[in-house]
Structures are given as structure tokens and as C-alpha cells.
Length: 258
Picture 1 (cartoon, helix red, strand yellow):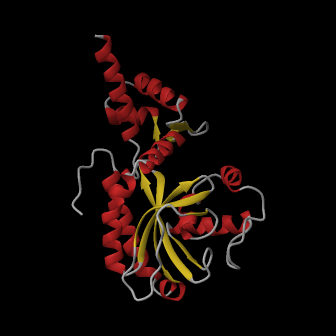
Picture 2: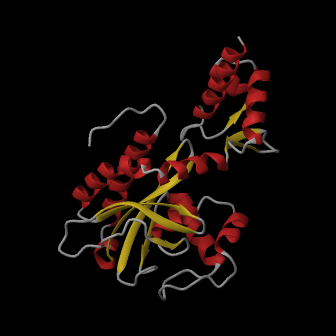
């Protein structure tokens, strides 16, 4: 039946997309066919169709494929529907209990980032994040963790001309400053800032990844002096929580206990 053949093709296309993971963010046609048990010509046609729709991107030099912008677009739709915040909240609650600092999840919003879930810290002095609040992408650890992996040309399109808006004396206002900061983020996998968006606030952030793409940033926020004095333990806690959230977000993950 034609219908069953169409469903088989759709299922194979989904198999191709789900093969892209944090451990395997790139595939060549031959190795992907071998992994999925599909003929090379079938995989080539599927990848071409997915690339035409923006779900995968092909590197013309290496001829390898990685996930494309359409995947991030779907992640944003899921976020707007409330799915991301619903899944993230118990993870943030555990993180806030463990560290005592406010735990926040942010997603890209054009050239800015928006808070979609937050749990306040339990310390005598804590930072309260407001769900729905939008902040400039170049100011603060959350934005650095979100945007550090983007190509420079795309960043300029999102952020606009220099000088970038200065929120405090510590805010990066040039692309040269951002390039230096983001190189550190790419090398270490963590962003640490003090006073970039609010002069009294410090933050540590890590990217949350799904199938090799950054879909959010997870951040611990508190008084600048306190946060910058304990970045090692906050980073360790964040990495564990981000891994937990990535696992919960993965396709096929069942309901998780809070």
C-alpha cells in the first residue's frame, strides 16, 4: 500500500534525525547507513530531503551532516507550549536545593534570551528570576552559554552594529570582547560572569544540549561575591543538572520522577 510505504519513509527519516546525539553530532552517509541498517542511496535521499527542509546541514568539504536550524525551531515551539519549562522545573528545584542559589533556564529569543523556568535560592540573600523576562544576549553568562557556538556572521545579524548596549561597566560591547569570552566558553563548556547585566549579580551557566544542538542555558545566579567565590562546585552541580535535563528531553524519554 502507498500509505504504508509513506509511513516507512517517515519512520526512516525520524531514525536519521534521532541518530544525531551529543556523542555523535555528525554523520557521513555511508556510516549512517551502516548504523541504521539502510542502503546508502536511501540514506542519501533522506538526508537530501531533510536538508531541503533545514533539519540537517551538509558540510561541503567533509560531506558530513549535522542538525540544522529547523530542529532549534521545533525546540522553541516546544518551549512556547510549556513543555520545556514543565520538564525543567524539577531539575531546577533539585539544583537550587543542592546549591542554595537561584536556578534558571533561559532560551534564545532573537538576539536576546528569555527566562522560561526558575526556582529561587534558599539563602538569606538570593536573586529572583522572573519567568518571561527578556535580557540582551551579549550580557551575562546565560547569553554567553546560549550563543557561544553560533557562527560570527549569524551573531552579528542577531545582535546588530557595535557598540552593543552597555548595561553595566562590565558589559561586553564589542564583538572582539565577545569572541574572546565565547572562545573560553567553547573550550571549557561553562560561562562565568559578574556584574554584566546587573552590577551586583554573579552567574555561572552551561548550555543544555539535545542531539548536539544547544536548546537552552541553565544558570545559577546569586550575589556576585558569593557566586564567584564558589564557581567550581556550582559548575559541577550545573553540569550534572544539565545532563539530567538533556536526558529527560531526549526523544523517547518517559516521565521522570520529580
